[in-house]
Image (cartoon, rainbow, N blue to C red; front, side):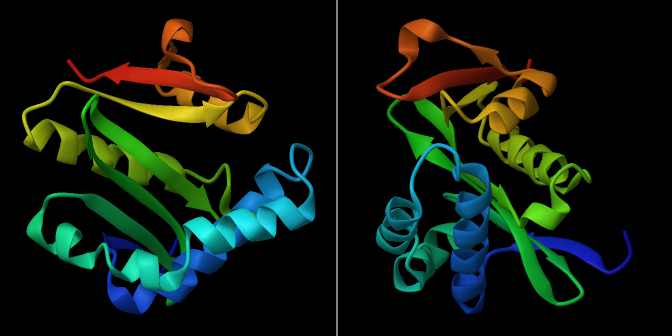
Length: 162
């Protein structure tokens, strides 16, 4: 795809990233949650001011947060960081029109390079148990479901990079 770039997240991207999250949630979770829940959840967990506060960690290399940009529009992003369990993929979202075109996988590969550069050989994510698109995506890309680590409504999925 022409005019497609990947780059680190900046504070100027915060509103666009919020919009990507909102559209992705509306699309992905429409059959799981009602519209009011989706709006409230995204507004609470992805407000631009909260996102912008992550920039120092991105700039210092303590966190991976890259955006995919097509024709000057943020169309997706990948956010990965470190927890007590290890490296965790927190968020991977694309605008619905871009799903299935390789951009999500390209973002994940960049995140995996970040994990390896930090001396780790595996990472994990949580995927809603009814998010069939997400579960298929991760399984096709080498993740495995570790049911013993599931939480509430979420599958625990782990990938070895060795």
